[in-house]
Length: 207
Length: 200
Image (cartoon, rainbow over all chains, first blue to last red; front, side):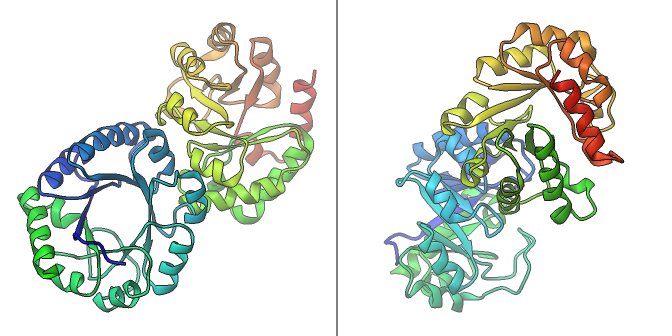
């Protein structure tokens, strides 16, 4: 399945305040913000989630939380993103309202199909290219995997891992509905500009 | 019984055995507190723990992650001090028994007001595990908290069978411990000693 507009999802980096990062990304046109912070307390995450939800909605964007379905439920954000080491997606789906979004990280066709069967609304496929943002095991899957997965999948594929202005077009042409980035936006000298540049590049190769 | 799988040499095998042994001896709240685990591993540990609990008088509470508790079919959630606000978490997890860790009278009162079903208060005695919460607060503070709230209060911090009665006399409903279950030379005897005091 392919969406009409290419989606940019910005994942927060641990190094800076998630709300400040999100504001810049949203100004640049990000359609989705994913709150990801592995060492914050439940109380911090909850407060960030409330702020991010308000901010995202002001920009007509979606606010989701990585791993912590508990925080997503308590703060009533738009959804949750689960990795392969998080709560099983089928268990999470039962706790999540039908109108909320469930995203699942996958790296293979099998994982993608399983995610959809479990009720995923999109899959995050990666890592496409080598990346330093997350410590990843295994080799990059490459853009060919996007095509392999996207052609038969009932939900959008969001590509992740080492995506920059230089390769984003390749990713979209391979069949991704959008991309998710951490450092490409968060660590850019001008994150707002970095976000809008990625979106422009994605849109131009959709034409 | 607060879990501490990192304190076991082979937790995969030893923890379920410990759960069976303790729940066979006396009714307990098992609090799964395993911060190092991924949500997936915590979920699997919760399922395994439930399958090893004996009798029907014990409860399983998961630390903080009410999503994991709901998914695994645990009885409740135990919220640490810096958790997601208790009232918001409870609104999103109907039917769960909710415990809250408290370290002052003020925290205890606010946890009760937010809907906690039970409180853990401490550290009452000296304990290496809870050094970060500062010096022990003693039995008088425990008594003050127990008199001020109407929900059950479990004393924590340096608890052994020999000081359990003092906690009960000072208003505690029960006691919570971690180290004593892991370091006991004779767990059966330790549990019998707890039971003798608690069932008095």
